[in-house]
Amino acid sequence: MRLDFRTAALSEQEEQRVRIAAQLLAAHGGQARVGAWDGTRCDLVVLNADDGYGRHVLDVARRRGLPAVALGPLRPDAAADGLVVAEGSAASLAATLWRLVGAAATDTAAKTSRSTRADLAGLLRLAETPLRGADVRATIAGRSIVLRPSVGRTRGRTLSDLLAARDHLGDSGWQFEALAPGVDDAMPSDSAMSLDAFLLTGALRTRVALPPFPDGEWALRDWPDLGAAADLVAGLRLAQRLRRAAATPRALAEGAGVARELADACLWAFRAADLLTETAAPAPRAAAPPPVVRQLLNRLAARFGLAR
Image (cartoon, rainbow, N blue to C red; front, side):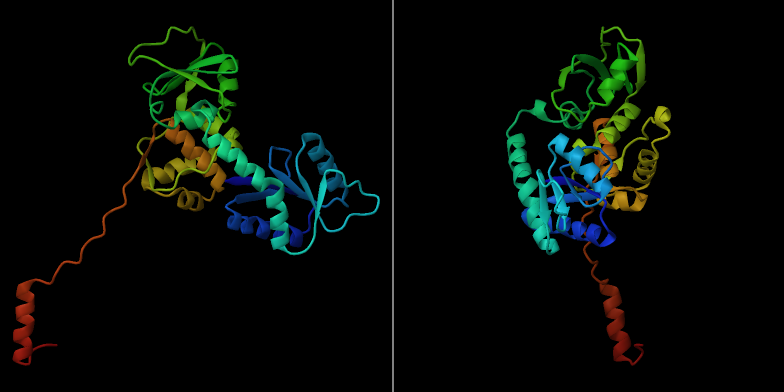
């Protein structure tokens, strides 16, 4: 289970304490990423409520119903409603964080595992069989597009439909209808773009909704068509490394110098485009026994005092 924490107006020592607490969540079965508050979706924010910027972030968190934790004691005039105060060690902070979001996230994950496949993000469904590599008509929020891996293109009635669908690849509720092989869809369309660029851009924009990519060694079977998305530097760097050699998601992120979250999103996009292949680990080689002739020569040399 992956959690996303944000911090605001903390000192360097307080930031370090939050990061240590996030690492300690592994004992509860959780995995947390810590980053600076940027206004995007997250699970919890840790802040300094005595700081002006910290109080601004707290107001935003309250409006969104987002759990907020203050480090250190509050001023007497500080409004404490909706705010949890955490003092003491990193271990006590970890316990507070888990109490606020961990148990609820665990319950949500359990419900998700029992839900229908339609509750998964659209990109994740495209990355699995039988949809992976299949030509399909896809519908989300009343907008329909056509995904055609067979020709590497995606089409929509309008450019607006394509862009809206791309930006909702991390959402659930997608409906897919398989198209007959070799038969073009009759839906009129005025807009089209590269399928690989469509999936990669959508994955990066909705990456917070995607889970970690599965472990294993992965290789790129073909170079993705990113001509229309040449500004996606992370995707280009990862594709270049994967074309040279297979790698695990962690090794790929570290080798390319990108955040693991970005690497996972790119891998999901490559998988949905049917560009990835998992490589089998090579079987260990058995040590070859010494040749019988060499053994005999060694014994003869030792017998006549010629051995080195």
